[in-house]
Picture (spheres, rainbow, N blue to C red):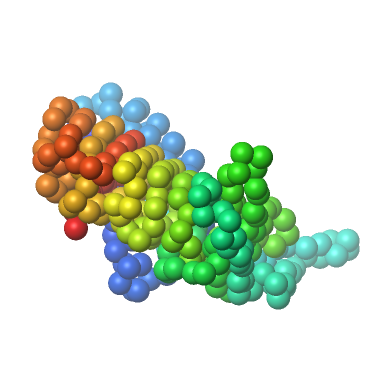
Length: 313
């Protein structure tokens, strides 16, 4: 087996193991604590290229040993809550640690935008961004959207823009860089079921769990780095587009059996499991009777080193 495949396999096992330990509540892993060390993987890739020219077993062992040691260090680093302390100087050559106080308004947040009955027919776009955060859809709301973030998370802004073509655009994003900013934490979201939704997600490291079975979703776009995505799509619209682009991620999508689905997968070294699908070509999969289905779901996967899974419910 080629050395590069072994090394990528070790990386996948590491990410999957961390996510599994998190899900079982065994550890608390702060992806934001390790995400800034991503250049390490460029160094490892360079070492792999240099040693790949050598056919000796010793070169392969050295490459794998460096990778394993690096992942072990990242494992312990990731379990440390992001440090908000910083070094300060008193002007006399002395230095110490100063802890920036967490402003009250940046503790537990509750954000909401009311629902306007006149906007039922309008398209509503929801843009979500963040890093090292867990986003969960908790259910319905009479408002257009409500957001709650816990005290361990960074402050968020919820911006409502109504464009000239009657499209409502909601932007949920971190408050921005500044003296007080940290990753991690949980963000719980509730959405109104009446609008037609287009959801665009861009996160670095983190988790995203959305059950959209009861929502009219025209488009769902996900752009993530080292992330975990669990998504459930309903059949309330004739056509739904799902686009997923990841670096290293664990992706699970559930679709209704009553909808036809076509998957186009550009997966590189990623693993894929599409239960109940027929392989049409190297990169195209379809459900039985797809062409005659009244409701259709189009899924596009683009991932270099991820796990993609699609199931029907």
